[in-house]
Amino acid sequence: MSRSNKAPAAWSRLLALLGVMLLAASCTNTTSDIGVGLPDSNVDTGAFLIDTLTVRSSTVLRDSVPSSNSEFLFVGQYTDPLVGKLTARSAFRLGLPAGYAPDPTAVFDSITLILKPNGYRYGDTTKTQALVEVHKLSRNTPIANTKFSYTSPRLTPLGYDSTNVDSLLNRNHVAPRARARPSIRTLRLPLDAGFGSRLLSLGKLRRLSTQNDLDAYLPGLVITPAAGDEGAIIGLSAIDAGAVMNLYYHVPTDPTTVITSSFSLATGARHFFQVRANRSAAGIKNLPTASLQKVRSALTGNQTVIQGALGLQTRLEFPYLLDLRQFGNNLTVTSASVEASVPTATLTRYAPTPPALGVYYTDANNHPTGLYQPTPVEYKTGISSLTGIDQGVYAFSVLDYCKAVLANTIPNNGLLLASATPDVPSRVVIGDSRNTLNKLTFRVYFIRVQ
Image (cartoon, rainbow, N blue to C red; front, side):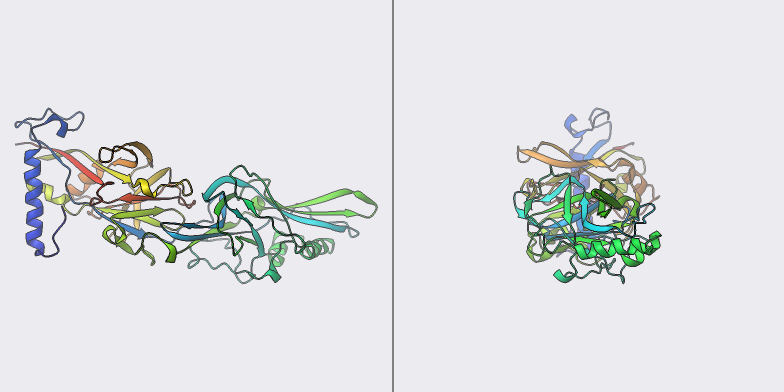
């Protein structure tokens, strides 16, 4: 039950409570109103079901999502019809090969960056795109060694020269345009010969003897989409042993034997990615733009959004939960559950949904304060009783939350729903309690002992 904007607060609260009590009193006559394992319903048991308690839904932005602790890198561009144009880019440090000491007579052959896609795709893989451009990370913005780097550009600067002059792609090699097929397991990117020659020369002069020496010369590499790319965001492994920058050379006395020095991403041990959104093309308007901002679902089409890498989360509040005390002191809540439905129209093969959600306690300012339950809530599908079609849902118990609030052991601040895999950009939309076809439901069963 929601309050009328025109009624005084006290009067609307009284109306809401009366509605709850009348509904509860009318729900004791059919066994369908009683949860599994509860007493048979009759006037003597005092068993009740309430399924019209107000739930307030909001989309919250929490942009402090760390990505330097992830095993993934992301690169690419895709215009999500709901949340806008997404651009992903990544930065990583390379590890110095053990005993890097090329022969003083060594002759440069070529240099290649090898990346290992992990099969994850967000976007339209039928479109062709350049997939990856490579740049040198600016010395002014080295990858942090002792603190987190974040998906938000606002929190973690990522400096590099985006002009062609500083691109490390081989200038004689035109980056092929290809489809971001999930079956691609290796990307080989020829890099600039001048860059490779300098790297070899420094090794021959023994000026790259330690990791610190390499970091001083090459703080890291940045991979970005091409400016005109409009296809998909692809996932890459940051820890695969096959993800390396290979420097190829030979010595004049044995020109047919190729010597390879591998600068590994895994041994570099520092990396992060960023995802930013241009909301001008977003189909869902009014999504939050400031950290910890909360936008109620009425302003976003009676629905909320959850997206891992962007830090979009959903807050559920139960403002009238404490009013259940009006039924008396001898009240026992035996079951309480939330079922969050996913509007079918928001599902697309181009934007994967989070396979599970984490549920968190929150404070009044939208900070998560602790995990509500250890097991993530899995995404499941079934036939909707409202539409008769296949419906995606996240369903979970809030029994412990309700008991704790009624016992005054925690404040009634509500719960936060977030992607259980925040280091991937998967997104999902869920309806609110006023959504006609995709209604969020909150059911409470309780027993009142006379």
